[in-house]
Image 1: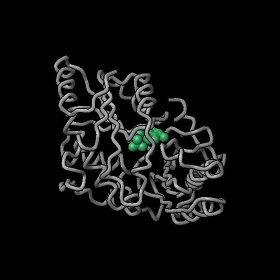
Image 2: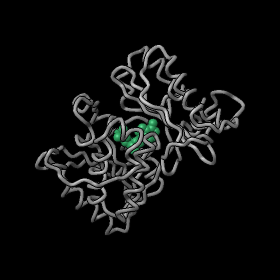
Image 3: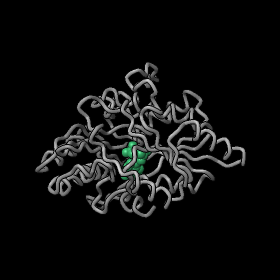
Length: 302
Ligand code: AMP
């Protein structure tokens, strides 16, 4: 595996790979790899011939007061995990390479519409604009490829899918399942911020969503009752402050009043310094056990 930090070198290597007829895979990340990141690289390696993983902690998607400066980094550990997963090229640009005149001087943004206005978009108003800018840059830099994103950030995946479609990006956007710890907690770089007590309690987010999914699979059609039950479970936890729980259409992410057809359940909770998000499909549980999580097993088997 080669590690590059200059756009010109990345383009040269990609030209060579394309000249050899190789199918390119792209895995955009902010680094500090865990099994979730590794699963994306493995999926790309499975489908493609030349896999580029990017590590860039993108200042544009953090707002003032968020954890940009504290964001964990581990260049050596990341390189070892990426190489082990079969990545061909690790692209790790410095901010000056991506934003030569500083990120504050970037004036162009993609208008994203309603998909980016709910949930994370409401809690972090500049977040998706920053994500869209860096992902658009990566799509321009890499060109025709399949790009792998985790369902862990389901709303981000939906926004990027829509953006790629609307702008005719030559990119096949591929969603990959959430990888979880054995107790159901979705793997996340930000889990390292959790204290021992917060780490103990944090799986309540997934348990609450699973409980909501069981209610729906048991026949509950009133989405507000599902939201209320999920919020109550989180509120009962000794630590953690609920930001939101939502029951939404999995395609449009529109708030549902009635759970008819497909539903996706979302939640965000602040545990100390860690703001954690999670989501599951209402069909990811079987109705017979309150906290059954088909997705946990499926995720950990990847
Ligand atoms: P990040 O480095 O946190 O920006 O994440 C990079 C990519 O990894 C994004 O597409 C995330 O959705 C994905 N990802 C992060 N955590 C997980 C997880 N637990 N399971 C699957 N994908 C994940």
